[in-house]
Length: 282
Ligand SMILES: [Fe+2]
View 1 (spheres, protein in one colour):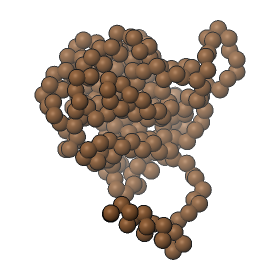
View 2: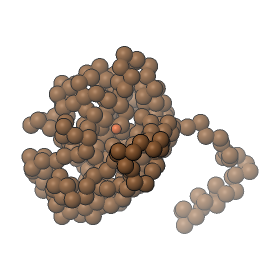
View 3: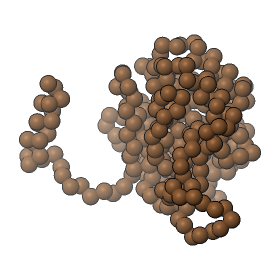
């Protein structure tokens, strides 16, 4: 099965402009995913759907944009989202005060987590949310399970964003997840950069944003000394495709860009294509 992921859409960054840059970048990604063959079976939208959490119009525009897709879309909360506006627009994905829920995706079970604390940019995950995940994981200890949420619980080495690996919520998440070998991977967003790492004994794939990206900068930043370094860059809008083989999860990172085509499948390339196909069969 094929799971699409988009993240950090930030609709409403330009208030009052329905044709804003972030909407055009979202539409470009949705057009690419909608035209894919094979089609994704579903799509995860891992938070920062709106730029301002009280912007109900942003959630309406997102639903309008994704409603044309031929596969279901699942919303998660990020730090820019507001729990009240999110719950008002997406009530089916909220219960007991949090946007945590289960997706029965056939061969794979997906558990969506809520790492929002409306008072901060970074993540949070309380005992109540931990108890929910522990109970869900205990229900089906053998079934391959994918965990999705907004905030990667790691120090990513980026100068601007990342988590303290010793933060209480990070330790809490690690302790709930670590005993469960059936967790095949975690997927997240938030960093506006693509990366892969490990957490709690499993893979953590972080999808880049549909909105503009964070500059790739692993240097130290002094908050008291503006030094004109690039912070936000307009890289092409991004998405991820997670391919569940039945044994493992393979993550592809994609971008919507008008890349020059250097080779096509024509008679000149056919011998190589034929050879590679034969090798895969043997
Ligand atoms: Fe974001």
